[in-house]
Image 1 (cartoon, protein in one colour):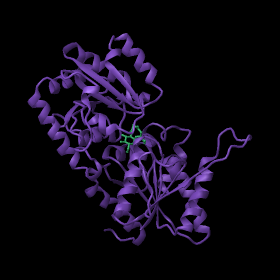
Image 2 (image 1 turned 180 degrees about the vertical axis):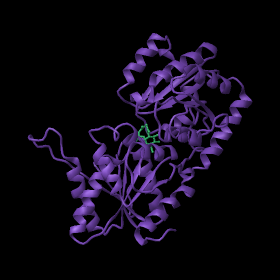
Image 3 (image 1 turned 120 degrees about the vertical axis):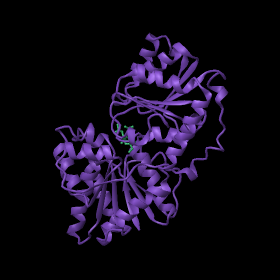
Image 4 (image 1 turned 45 degrees about the vertical axis):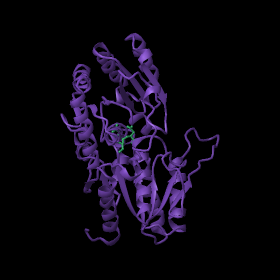
Length: 377
Ligand code: GMT
């Protein structure tokens, strides 16, 4: 099949999932065209089967906001026609489903019937999409998609509760490409980050309020009351300074390494002892799944889709949002006994293997086929 993928090219989870999916599809012989404003960060190489088409929006003094959706739908129409694309797959509803639908309508005028799948990722529904500024357009474009998927059961339920959706929502969870994980080959330079007797706790996110970065620091400070540890924070975002201030106030700043955005998350995860994700909302928690794939147990909240990924008492623990004492107790339960820690590490990896791309990708292929033929595979 020839598949056009629209996504955000940044470090966010939806862009990562879209890129890994495109790479996976190309490995299975499909021709994949990424259409977005920058080459996706996880897309390291292009090949005969993987193409990238840049959407540019020239500055014009009259525009206070550049009309990205307009440029995107025009680019979609041109690319879809030029390469005879079969499927348009947009990730993150805002504004991609809306721009995709415009492209679909324009193509229809020329007698070209493109099938469009929209994959909902989380904040496009729970945080941004539900805002009254966007809600009507998001509702409309989800209903106009030929196929809709969500990355967890919890997100499906949120979507049906928040919007007036007339379409079936298919749940296809996020995944890990274990073949390219290379976990054995990474140089695990633990000693550069911490002393041998210090536990390494890691957090990866875009440091937005929804991630509750202050809770990461508070949990860490409580762990430090009982044992030696280091905290590594990977990612950049608006709450970074707040996190630094809280760390100073709690007297733990010198035990925290802020790494900023990184392409080397795998290298850090390979020597991490624990991963902390205390989010307010989390439709899936790809960062947690990536940690688990590297045998890192997860201390998370029980919000959204996290219980569908992290199994309480097996791959980690779940706590109510904001309950830092419970999260710290759980962290210590795992870190204080080597046998328990080893058990959780093994369970985390085993659980992550259930999300192997080899099992998940077929679900997308079947739905593409269904859109094209009308037959349920
Ligand atoms: O919240 C983020 O870190 C970014 C955001 C995105 O769309 O890029 O993540 C959402 O999609 C991810 C991939 O499907 C999910 O794993 C995240 O749970 C989800 N974030 C939220 O729901 C807050």
